[in-house]
Image (cartoon, rainbow, N blue to C red):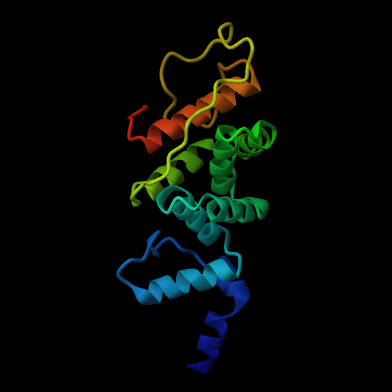
Length: 185
């Protein structure tokens, strides 16, 4: 009916609709691809997050990927803030990267962000990887860490890390290893 069609095309609806049943990249469904594109155009945070990860890690379009992730993070998408923070730490934007990871930690979103990122990249052909920069902490040798690698469920996985730099570096190493297919837990 016309009223339902009009409602379904409303920008507010497209900006807030659940994308749980829509694949990250809808290869086989032009209708799903069109729907996902409309959601991105309205600024849907999850659609922007997915697009950012796909552009950055699969298509190696770093600028486009960073723009999408930044847009999603600005409207409060915790997973986008996590991925963007890790990327920024790898490209020498330490202050902003730490700020974003601290935001994610304050929202208790580390575990969920890891799971979501892992789920998305497992559906992609990866063409762009991250290289961790050396830990910026001058006292990293004195700081104690847990003996085991944190699980995806640990939101307080860096409780035994004495400083912010070491905690952020732990997240960078986790993501870099995940991208390379190294099992870290």
